[in-house]
Image (cartoon, rainbow, N blue to C red; front, side, top):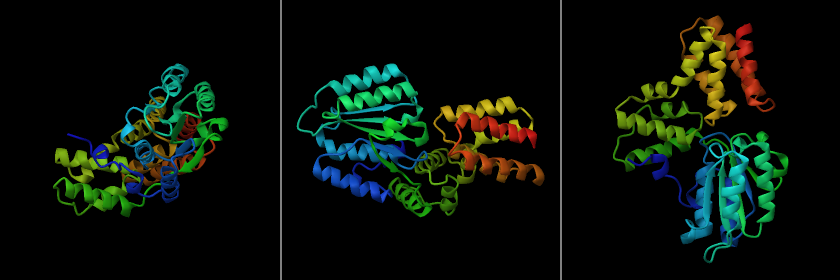
Length: 304
């Protein structure tokens, strides 16, 4: 069974939802047959990868497959990857009548600083032959020299109405009725289109109610909350570190924890102490290193 996130991914810039500024510029690039290196940043599930693929397909046309390379930096984050896979592809000439080759590097904020510096040098060396599209959840973790060599576009979360329209369209196309509580279900994912579609498909496939599916999707945060309540602070910290390694941003983590704390049955005093720590953690997330911030949040929870 094909994933709905893949099946209903936009195949051209014209079909991209939201991100009006980027879409208008991208349509101009396609018309001109030229584009800058790009850095698309924003929280998970807002359409960065989908937009990148749609743009590459529009620019490269029928020769997309032989002139396009996609790597996930959270999996291939080492310097050796930059020196081998990326350099090998970039050094090859374009195939057919296309303006250049395109490399999509997802989650580049997961690369080491050395790897990012190596990438910067490759971008400079092969600028006549290759365009790079970089995506990141957290732009602050990307070295400035790399940022400055790209046109930067911040991707915003879609409005719930837009996500509802997409989910409604998908359900009807798949021959399913639209649940009466679909909008309530969508609001649980805080603008993450990919997660909303993934959990919706999982609920339909398993016959699970939408509310039960939301609870399943938050299981890791419920487990972490239990660790905190039971004073297993080291385990809670390590579990939160694991969420970072799985590509979650601090905003994602704070939102997930917020949801499970709100729904928990703990006493009001404890609940609001933890909510205060989560709120301050989310506020500090733009200025603090994620791992240090997690340690700080756990320490604050312990002190309270």
